[in-house]
Image: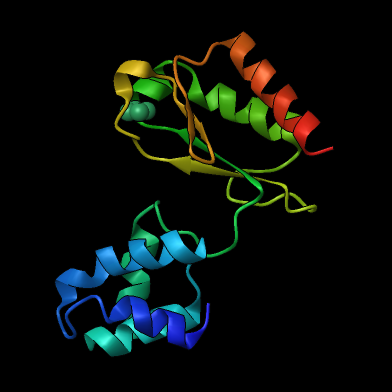
Length: 155
Ligand code: FES
């Protein structure tokens, strides 16, 4: 992301207002896909906050990423409901089936897996999101089909 692009996003927010930090980081990530040190430094300058403070906030929330996602970015929920419905086992199956560990991107950059906190759809647990598509009430069979489908699309 260019410095000009960062500046154009920042221009939509009040300067020196630290309440703007989360919305700014969300906005930048939505446009860039992930955050970088340069981005955090620019945001810090704009809000007049030290870089380590910005970094601390950004790393505190699971929603922020510091590396690009794969073409298929899988988010698996580890909130309480999803956990009770077996999301830990599902995570292991995803990692094994797609040969990529959570928090990483496959070597060919096609698949990445992220563990998230509650996605706000607990009544539909377990929930897995692939890019913008939500898979709810995921069953063992559904998970197998999902893994197979991603494998076929990334051949
Ligand atoms: S716990 Fe998974 S959506 Fe809420």
